[in-house]
Structure formats: C-alpha cells, structure tokens
Length: 395
Ligand SMILES: *Cc1c(COP(=O)(O)O)cnc(C)c1O
Image (tube, rainbow, N blue to C red):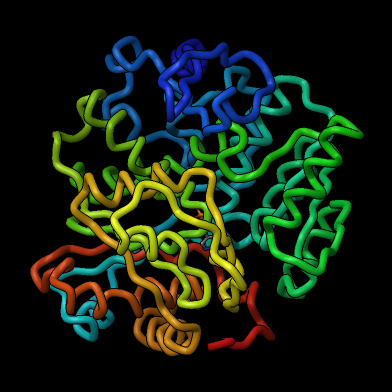
C-alpha cells in the first residue's frame, strides 16, 4: 500500500455551515460557528490510483479506502476488523414488505457488535496520530463500547459517560475493554455535559458525534461499500435508523466524493431516516419542513441507539433527505421487536431493535408513496441483537 500511504490524509477541514477552511493537522472539535467540520481531500490527485477496480483486491476492512480517510501514518491505523460487512440478499423479507429487491447491510458483524466501530476506529486513530492523551465520550451505549475498544487498541485511556438504563451487556463490555464508565441518571445529552467538564478540567479529547471531524469519515465508508458490493451502482432507497445521523450524513458525503472520483454518476439513492416514536426529532422536523430540529422532550425507546433527543448535524440530515427525494418515519418499539423476529426468521440475522425499526418503516414509507414496489432497497441493521438481550419494548 505504498502509494496509498503517500496519498492518504485530508488537505483541510471545512465548516459545514460557513464553508470556512481550517488546518486539519490539529486536534479539533466543532468549527468556531459551533458546527461540524468535514475533511476534504485532493480527489483529483487521488483519482488515478483509486478507481473501484484498484480497490477490489485490497484488505477486507474500511482501510481499503485509505486515500479518502484522514489518517496519514499507517502505524496509527488501528484495525480490529471494522467495515466490509456483508450485504445480505433478503428475498423473503422483500416479499413480506412487497418490494422487488432488498438487502440488509449487516453492521452487527462489526467489532463490538455495531457500526459505531467504523466511526470510532477513525476518530480514535486520528486522535492518536495527533497526540491525544485521554479520550472521552457520552454514549447511549454502543459508541461507548466502540470507543473503549479502539482506545484499548491504541493504548489510550477512555472515559465513557452513559445513562443508567444502558443495556447491561454493553456496560459489561465497556468495563471489560478497560474503560472508565460513569453512569448518569439522564439522557445522552446530559452525559455530554459531564464529558465537557472533563474536557475542561482534565484535557480529555471529546469524541461526541460530529463534534470532532472523523467519526463521520469512518461511517462514510458504508457508502463506498454499497457501490462496490452492488458492482458499481447504488440502490434506489437506503433506510437508515437515525440517532445523531453520522452514517446518513457520511454516506451522503461519500456519494459526492465517489462522483468526483468517477465511481458513480450523478444518481443518488433516496435517503430515509427512521426514528423511534418515543424520540423522533428528525421525523418531526422533516414533517414540518424546517431546517433545524428542536430537542425532543421525554425521549423513550428501548432502541438505545435512537434515544438521541437532539443532533448537532440536524441540518445536514434534513438536507440529505430533501435533496435525495427521501423522507422519514417514526416506529413504535413493539413494531421494532416484531420485525426483529421476522428478520431473524427470514434471514438468519439477529438484528438490533434499530434494524427492526427500518424494516417496520418500509410499509409506512410505501403507504406515503415514498418507496415504490419497484425499488431496490437497502436496510441498515446497525447492530447485533445480542447487545440488547434483556431489554424490552417500551411502547
Ligand atoms: C448509534 C446507533 C444508531 C444511530 O446512528 P447515528 O449514525 O448516530 O444516527 C443506530 N443504531 C445503532 C445500533 C446505534 O448504536
């Protein structure tokens, strides 16, 4: 991968609200405008050795896309087997839902059993490369265990702040991975406040969703994988369980990069956000036709990845839904659980409630005419059902 190593790394960071540029060779959080930063690359320089065919025989993890990732030093690229998850053809679920073709991208097969591994792999690798000495993260669960795993692999201490009702298997996992775990009687937003105190008092580096630039870079690799795994095209519709929205925002970013790299044309899938009926700030904002989502009060759902009452990247999520001709739907917990069972029986995948949620949303989106029976659909199962053992639906 010698050429790859020479080409890797961003040219600069760009504020997603103002377009202002910033140096990428520093530990950094949000832009001065308080908005997420995106890494930008010299795609014209990368393009000659980075066609889809060049990547085809590379290592089967997300580091196969090193030219469009921010980590320069190969020794800083922490690897536990993240990414390159299977796209599982699910004809029985397709028939059940009444669509022509359906795949499940099974992100439950990532290290630590969820797709949080992709984002934290990149965020921790880059923070390590730039000299961070201690990491911290507020989490609804899965982000905390992914941070714990990559921190352990990098040899860095990780402080995780999670709500007391975080699934027990995830708490045990974080502790086994050596993290300092603080439990808080509150939501992920309250946990964020404790992390900010630690940042000020102890110099921890904050790995919160979209509050550093690189988790989204890890998550965007799902977009590259879709194109590779479908032989150079994209599906008609992507249905994504949305908390902070990093994966949806990341894939949307990836499609633009891929077009400029010549991997795809100007076509885009319809992007769909699915949230829990008990915590649906993005769905509400989508239905109201506004650009920013207000905080959701009294968030409840057993899908802990969706228990996110507010997202700093709200405007980026809503923009992707709108520009793609997609939409949003909210699903009550009991339907998530029903669809976890149906997917399991149909496919052999033990999905997380979030994976059940996206399947449950398809009939709702078809009723509204947003997904058609003729569409090829990809559902994201973002985690393994094993991480939720003992949790039961709330509504
Ligand atoms: C975090 C999480 C989500 C939401 O992901 P975002 O990219 O933050 O929107 C969905 N499913 C699971 C299992 C999660 O852990």
